[in-house]
Length: 459
Image (cartoon, rainbow, N blue to C red; front, side, top):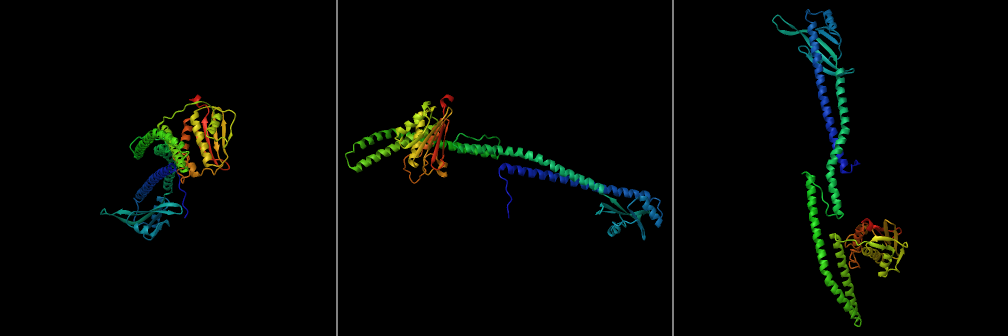
């Protein structure tokens, strides 16, 4: 069995629910009122019709002689109008086919009536005996019976008019219900939207985001609960950052001393056994790696604490790129595509950190040739670093800028701390720019650094 499509979105479902309830309620109320009024109209019409007939019989039969003859019955029927039948024992004046035998049997000693629907519409059948008063003042049926058929079509049209009005009322209620439903849905969904926006901000790293709370309903309680959770999470993260910053700071001084000692030791083992030299070189490499990790942790701590600041100065970006490559011995390994001049106002040290990280990653993890392209104008400096390796998988792209994330989890001791791209992104955003990761056409990883060219002037 094929399932009906379900509406998506809380707003759509709320509006549909409100409209359905409002329309059903308005329709039920209108039809109930119409049915009640219609029934009252019919009952009142029947009562008045019967009273009129009884009054007419009383006025017509006051001087009636008994026992009546056929002429008497004809005269009586004629005086009472159309659709009248008068009987007395075997005599009959008029013919009313709608009068049933059950009604005739019941009308021998009392007034009866019955509503029927014939080919010409609703009819009211009335049967009543003519009662006479004897010498002893007792009232008894005279044997003369009067039957009448009265048309109820006019009253039925009134009832149909009531139901038409009820249907029109229901139709008019529909747009009003939709409008009220939209207003009600907006009132309900506004707090939900605030919860969603705050959750997104927290997910994006804005730990100061909180939900404005008003009232004391369930949504207000949910907002307060989320705010308390955010407070606890923010405090926990602050403690972790303080711990990392303190540990990094405490490690920096002994590591500096250890680095100097290890380098002296490595210089003194040139004339010793190869195994001793390898051990000394390994100690130097691991110590330098540990120092780099501590430096990266301290840099991350400065970003988290909000103490990282720009030192903007006039920079010739083409020279900065060449100096970065030359200082690390990468000039022969990297193809550059740059204009002759590209002046900008930037923090040269932070630009060098970003460039070294992007080019170093391309050389270590991609395939040659590694290319650096520079495009610059008065407002924007764009540096693109690409390689011709396998590129970045969707999983790596999703976490490329996460701290301590390494694409190759099988090599946890690979060069780099896993903080390089996170620090590069933070430096780009500190400039008011951005760093984007993706894949180049034809394969290979592609990173694009965008920085405002006149940052210093805008500041």
